[in-house]
Amino acid sequence: MSSSDMDRVADWITPGAKTVIFTGAGISTESGIPDFRSPGGIWDRFDPKEMTYQKFISDREHRKKYWAFHRESWRGIRAAEPNAAHLAIAELQNLTDVTAIITQNIDGLHQKAGSDPERVLELHGSLWRAQCLECGRTLRSERAFQQLREGQDIPCCFHCGADLKPGTVAFGEALPEDVMADAQAASLSCDVFIAVGSSLMVYPAAFLPEMAVNAGARLAIINRDPTPQDPHAHVVMHGLAGEILPDLPRRLSG
Ligand code: NAD
Image (cartoon, rainbow, N blue to C red):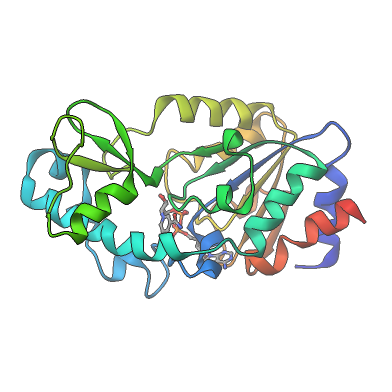
C-alpha cells in the first residue's frame, strides 16, 4: 500500500457520498478468531462436508457434531474484542454516511465495536443467536451453549422443547432473504464500496462488490492476500486490516 492509495479512497468520500463496508473473516483474525482458509484456519480441523444444512436437518448425529463445532467457535467469539479495524469502521459512521456494514462474519464484533446494529447486515447470521427448528423462535445462544456445558448434546427450545440450530447460515442453506435484499439495495446505491478481509470467493456474498462496481461505485479492496476481484477494483491494498483501515478515519477527520 502507498499512502496515495488511502488518499484516493478518502477523496472519493465527498460530502453526501454513500459508503458501504463489506467484511469477511479476515477482519477478525487480529481479534484472535481464525478465518476459514488460512493455514491453521477452521477447515484444517473440521470437514466442511460434515457441516451442511441438509445433514443438520436430517440426522441427529450430525446435529451433535454441528453443535460441537460451533461450541468450539463460540469460546473464541464470546471472548473476542474488536480490533483497530472494527473500531475504525465504527468511527467512519461519525465522519460519513455509512449506509451499510455488510458482513459475512458471525462474531458480532461490529456491534461490539459500536457500529449501529441497524446498519450491520449479517449475511451469514450470527453465533449470538440460536433458532428453534419447530416453532422458529430466536433465542440468545448463551442459553443454548449453557445447555451443552450442562451435558446436553443438542440444546433445546425453552418454549416447545424441539432442537435448536445455531443462528448461523450452514452450507447449503439459503441466505436470509431480507438481509440479502437490504445488502443488494445498499450495494446498488452506494458511491464507495470498501471490502475488507474477505477472500471474495464465497458466493452469493462475493457478487456484491461486483454489483456495486457495475452500478457505478468505486471499489477498494483491503486484504492480506490477493483476491480474484482485485483486477476490477479501483484501489487494492494488501496487508493487515487493523494496520491499514485506521488510516481512513484519520484522513477524513484530519
Ligand atoms: P475467508 O476465510 O474465505 O478469507 C479470509 C480472507 O481474509 C483471506 O483472503 C485472508 O487473506 C484475509 N485475511 C486474513 N487475516 C487478515 C487480516 N488481518 N487483514 C486483512 N486480511 C486478512 O473468509 P470470508 O471471505 O469471510 O468467507 C468465509 C466464510 O467464513 C464466511 O462465510 C464467514 O461466514 C465465515 N467465517 C466467519 C468468521 C467470523 O465470524 N469471524 C470466522 C471464520 C469464518
